[in-house]
Image (cartoon, rainbow, N blue to C red; front, side):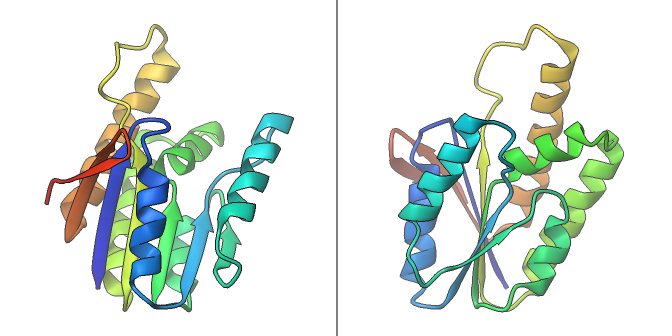
Length: 169
């Protein structure tokens, strides 16, 4: 039904803004987390995120099969945080660019097909310098394409900078 796209840089406030949007629906929320704990720092970060979420939110942790997780969500509101980690996961498991873009198209379609509100959070990585290695450039490019597809499919899109949301669409 309604897909809302929220993008911004690291520590921009995008996740907090998306969480406020989700809470503001007044409906039950599923929080779909895409991060995996590959090291101690990431385990701590995931733990902080879990502790910060409202206790009544249902959490699903799914690093790869995000399309199916969106289709399976039972609550009226779904918050997916985040597309950028998901794309990194797919690249880590050697998905080709075309496969990732096909997954992004399927994800956008799944989000638009479900009842209620779906919110996608992602990083905007295209504002910085050109990365110095091929893998980082590929990641920047693929994430940029995924973001474009998901933003195009959304009913609303926001760029969050320094904690301030700017409505793009």
